[in-house]
Structures are given as C-alpha cells and as structure tokens.
Amino acid sequence: MSKTNEEEDGATTTTPTNPPHQHHKIQVIPLEPSDIPEASRIMAYAFCDSPSYVYMCALLRRRDQRIAALQWLFQQNLKLMLDRSPQACQKIVLVLPKEKEPGSNGNHDNRNEGPDPNDEATTTPTTTTSSKMIGAFLWTPVQHEELGLLTLLYYGLYQIPFRFGGISAISRLLGSLDDMKQAWNAFAAANQNDNKSSSSSSLSSNGWIQLERMTVLPDYQGQGVGRQALQQMLLANTTSYVRLATQEERNVVFYQRLEFQVIGERQCGGINGETYHSWFMVRRPSPAAAAPAAANNNHGQE
Image (cartoon, rainbow, N blue to C red; front, side, top):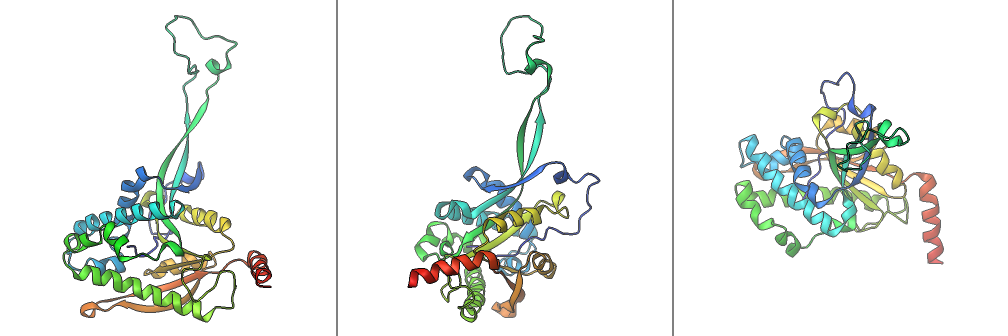
C-alpha cells in the first residue's frame, strides 16, 4: 500500500546562514511505533503534490483533502511494514547537544549548602543529547513487499474508497503498483547473470531493497541531509540491489550522483486517459562486495 516518489534533498529552499546539520550529527535509526503519526504527517505534506499521488487522489480536488487521505494511507503502510519488517522503516534524526546548567549534578537534597569545590559535576557544565526527527523513508527488503489480499484488508484497504472519494482509487493504486512490478520484472529478466546471489527473475529475491518516500523536512533540505542518510544505508548494504521509482526529473539527477542508474521509463496510470511519467532506477552492489557473495553462491552449488 505504498508508492514511491522520493523527495529530493536539493529542493529549492533558502539555505539558512548556519545550516543546522553542519553543527550536529545526522543519524539514521529504525522508526518506533510512537513515531508513526509524525512520520506519516511529514510524508503526506511532502508527497501530496507528487504526480503519482495526485493521480491516485483524482477524486479529491483540494490539497488539504489529499494530505488527510495520504496521511492515513502512510500511517497504515508504516504500521504494516513495522509489523512485517521492523528495520524497513527508518527515520533521519538530528542529534542535538543539550547543555546542563553549571551545578546540576543530579543530587537533589534539601540541605542549604554551597557547591562542593571538590565535586566536578557542580563546577563544570555537562552535556546530554536529544534528537529531532527531520525525515523518514522506507528501506524494505523486497520479500516483504509481496502482500496478500487478506493482509491488505486487515490494514485498511477496504477504507480507501471512503477516504479517497471512490472505488476507482483502489484501481489507480493497484494499477500503479503493477506498473512498477512490470519494470522490476523486466530488469530482473534482463540481468539474471549480473549477480547470481542477488539477481533473479523473482522479485522475492533476498538481494533486493526497495527505497520509498525519502523525505526531508523543508527547513533541512538543500543541506545534504538526505544524501548523508542514504549514504549511511548504502554503506551498510553493499551486497544488495537498491531500487526506486520517482516521478520528478530533478530526483533522477540526485540519485545518479549516488550511483543509481535509470533502467527504464514509462507512462503510468491510464484511467480516464490520465497518466504520469515514472523513472525506474537501480543501484547495483559494488563489485568488491558482489564478488565474494557470488563466490559463496557458486560454492554452495558445487
């Protein structure tokens, strides 16, 4: 129950004089259930004008209606993904140092005594850290993308006609997902020998990761936050193919800088003559990482 249209990190926004992330650490960590409402809200605002979601929300004429419907859809999708694969939902956090006031040593008594000069905690400020979610995305092993009808119904598929203005919203959603599946099948079929440990005509191969809805808050766009977050994930997953679909040409350039390649383009949709253009992109495993994996796979076949 998800679509893909990554929010480019280089979006046209005014860069602050002191970019926040340059003074603090960016981390990518698993999303917690308590983060779902905020993450779905961030995603809904980011993607309400995306061509693919505008197509799905064709019966919702107002922007606020699209935002409300998409926030519900993304919330259900995040719940589903967390239940099936907890590592699939990731959040981007800004780690903020929080300075304690001098003299705060955590001891709370009622004695009217001055600070002990021998107690370092009373004379030297100490620091702790806090964090703020500034983005989120899905990083889903493809075997968890295949969902049965009963699962979709359990997580709210039956509510889509009521929330999106009609039964055609389901046809639009499922048709768009089928467009993506056809693109991935065509790539897999053409590259079966690319890396036997990861490439297969079956999209349930353990070597595939699906990147979806890469989103960064507007105040932090254009500062390299999305690039840093994605680089962390790519460095930790050097043996996997990573795939995505985007409907924004500017995103194509962004992902090409991270070694993604366009493997196909097509006009998607088609209901009532309405279509949108999609680029399908794949990042192959690095040769150094793929070679040992292929060797291990061949050894197991001997």
